[in-house]
Image (cartoon, rainbow, N blue to C red; front, side):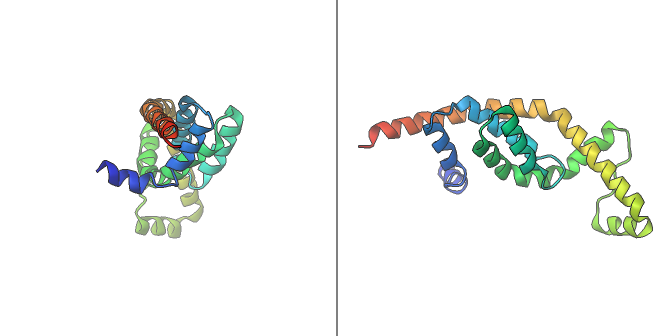
Length: 166
């Protein structure tokens, strides 16, 4: 199982950029922080905003742009999976009834009142963003704590293989 995961997930697109960063001397701590923040930013319940925000945050906090964008890219499927849970948490947080997001109900809602529907979806979106922002510090800390030992292990493997090669 470990080898299958490594072949599919770790083949080139994710692990190679991280290995390159480690070999350039960037610390596992900086990479773990970049990855954690990038992953949390990327699950913002507004499609397409993650790349822009990751870039702005990386430049503002002087995090590694490659690492934060790798995390953004890898976490994109989670953004789609977490849209409805964040919308529901936002509605609960603001004590609002959740908007029914079934396609047929959305069509009926827009047919009945276009501007009211836009307002309802806008409200749902920003409430979902507030819920996600409220969870951000905990999510970043948890991801950092999970990623740091993995990156330290990856660094030690790379240094070991570097020493063994002629």
